[in-house]
Length: 285
Image (cartoon, rainbow, N blue to C red; front, side, top):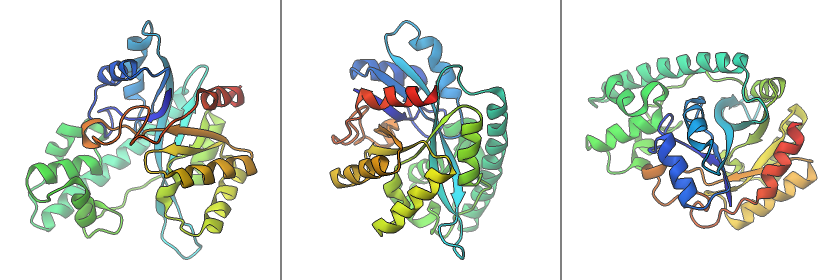
């Protein structure tokens, strides 16, 4: 059993890198990818911990990008997984991440001010106490919940934080197609994360989008995910075959903020085969 999509508290999870590694070993995982949002900090901390632990640690990251699905539409967020084998991410790629992290903090500052405009006593400092330098909307949601402004994590997003919510504040993100090329340039493998979340209910439009990304250099698609039904998984496996893409999968484990999602198995239906990881290593050269 492997899991190629997990998060530590260095982005929006609740487990430290050590706790995540220990949980993976306890769960019987053969391989674990730490794919925090826009940072390698969790992975870097896990490297010495896993050195003698008998766990295959994979260097991953989940990037937030933007893409306009139609010529006249507003750009929407698309998540892109990247995996680095062999020597890991180069210094130039890490430097590029610093720019993204600075853009994230600027957005967070504006989002805190926007929430205060709605009468919600939220400060950037208390959000960063939870999320450190990689604080994001999930950490705002936790503060809103802890202060009693909402009754659930989902309500925080629905009322204030989602892209269609009243307090949403945009941030500068790299263009999806450019990010795919950058990953390839620096020796990484790119995979479209949880494609079901794109909301492309027309399967033909969804397929057209996947074909566009393949032509732009996309290497893989995430077929196994906690949000995917068996039908979704079959559809994405079919698209992978049709367009010559590798396949990735993982629970999207976040720890206590998503208690129904378990390492390796997600909500019970995630079962990423070891062969998927072998294939990624094969195409990475």
